[in-house]
Length: 259
Ligand SMILES: NC(=O)c1ccc[n+]([C@@H]2O[C@H](COP(=O)([O-])OP(=O)(O)OC[C@H]3O[C@@H](n4cnc5c(N)ncnc54)[C@H](OP(=O)(O)O)[C@@H]3O)[C@@H](O)[C@H]2O)c1
Image (cartoon, rainbow, N blue to C red; front, side, top):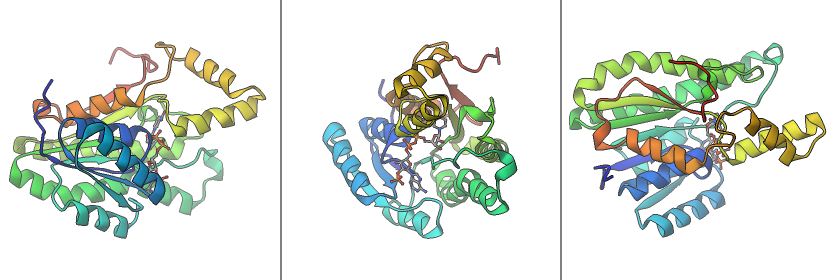
């Protein structure tokens, strides 16, 4: 399917690896000019080179911490008026909620809620004027199905979801959409470190920990980042203008509910 976004400009935050990278790849394949981002310069440069090689698209790497004002400034310097914004950032490390300090909680809310809102504040005006805008936020399946130890992540992302549910309705008539994609278990570096920790805790091999986790998923496997990227690119496409304020759970059937 032609997604109808060739030549559109996209900023994909936190995209040198994993789900962000997959979104950038799918958008570049659809013909978008893509700004990719991460803090590790060498890793980001390698990701940009790979994307250029595999998609033939225009890819601009911006080494920056998306959670900082100067990082956000650097992203907009590279792409002042994006048509597409994919919000992504690392989540806070797992921790028993009793042990969270005030500072850690504020950092978590900043990283997984406030940063996305700040970026949206900057892009929404020009998007509504141009009558085209696609905003996708990578949140987490934990918004619908909280996991103990990831309470800060779940809470901050649920806050973002509720915040944007209202905002999305105020710009829908300008062909600007705001949607969230909620990943379940996807095969990325982050999942790999989660499995390494699980293996240590249970005194089993990482392969055994992976098999145990996959067995809890109705699809009996982890998601492939490219599957996630394709869904993101569709939500950013010209065809998705009537889909807004939605939460797309991609988890191989893990969340067991009819709605
Ligand atoms: N994979 C899953 O199964 C899963 C499930 C539920 C939720 N999620 C959530 O989905 C998001 C993406 O996960 P992932 O699995 O793709 O993670 P990942 O494989 O660890 O990749 C994270 C990417 O974000 C970049 N990054 C992290 N912090 C950044 C910052 N402050 N500024 C700019 N770039 C930053 C990293 O590059 P640098 O380190 O170089 O900055 C890297 O490119 C996370 O919020 C995660 O919690 C993932």
